[in-house]
Amino acid sequence: MNQTSNEKDWLVIVNPNAGNGKGKKDWTRIAEIFSRKQISIVHQFTEAKGAAKDLAKEAAQNGYRKIISVGGDGTLNEVVNGIFSQDTCSTDEFTLGLIPVGTGNDWGRMFGIPLMYEGAVSVIKENKILKHDIGMISYYSGNELINRYFINIAGLGFEAVVVKKTNNQKDKGRSNQAIYFYNLLTSLLSYKNTDADIIIDGKRTSAKVFSINVGNGRYCGGGMRQTPDAVPDDGLFDITVIKDMGKIEIIKSLKLLYDGTILSHPKVDGYRTTNLRIESKHLLFAEADGETLGHTPVEFSIVPKSINIVYGTKIIQ
Image (tube, rainbow, N blue to C red; front, side, top):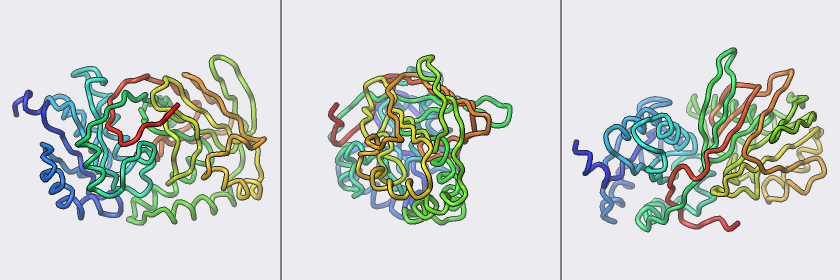
């Protein structure tokens, strides 16, 4: 294919399994809307978990600089990691769009990207651009140190336990928002808070923690506002540390997670920084953009304004 023509086209990476098979079932309808709105696209379907990363990396080598992810937050995360793992060009030469087809769709929620396909494609057509920060998390899987990028929110502790359970059920073909909430409540029965050292800009704080969230974005878990004041292009992470809460107190505080007032709780600390390290004697496990990762020690760093995204409505600082 000609590299010049590829730079003009959007490459659309479609996860056919997203949203319990909606990606495959609805693709013909989505493609028709692109055609009607005269948006030039080439599409590719993912064939396995991790394939969106490979397709995005290959797309860069083939001259594409505009990519649309059709899927959920996990598919978008893979596309971001494909862009950041290529060495063909700078990441800020890429523009990323989204057609939400997943179960959570938390990143798109922050940017006013409609769940209705007509509206989501209209956002692509309008082509309003924002330079978005990207986070990098360095974590361990056994003795192996691994780096992964994320665009929205990463979490350690309780959040990662719930995500892991939910992803196991997704792999078995069961996925909806009710399952996530069910896993959240049932995981509370066995989860134990963990002693951790939190190092922010070299300053160490020790605490028994329930969960730690690190956000470029504001929403996760299908609408929970774990980092409610995060701004995606300010060059800083927003960090929410939920400390040693009991199970009843957590249940009573769930409303605060959904209405954006979690930072008002006396056992919740909020920070803003470019670098964060978490150490713990007993392993704390991590997730990023809803993808299950490894464990502590974990370090976060930010890559400011490193990719262009297409948005519907903009977060006001």
